[in-house]
Length: 86
Image (cartoon, rainbow, N blue to C red; front, side, top):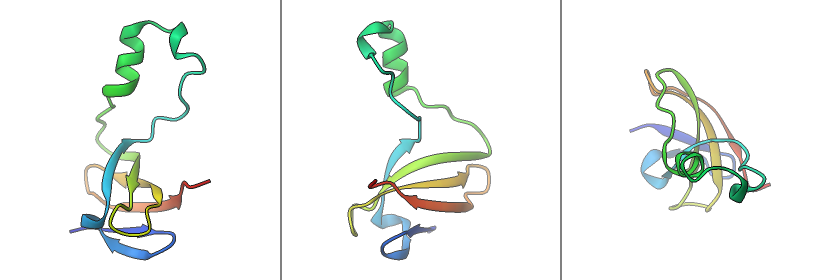
């Protein structure tokens, strides 16, 4: 198991978290103005790179915070985490 650092609860087992997908940045300003295929890809087709990625995880069995982590997909090393509750 891997440990994910929750800014509120400290280092916790990954089983307490639910994977929320890659951090994809801002949503398009006007989804209705882009092609259906581009919108569908934005919602459902994540990149799958080898190496460093930024991901969103929900601390479902803890404080409920959304946490963004930087993780290396080749080694699974978690390099940083931040609170995304705003």
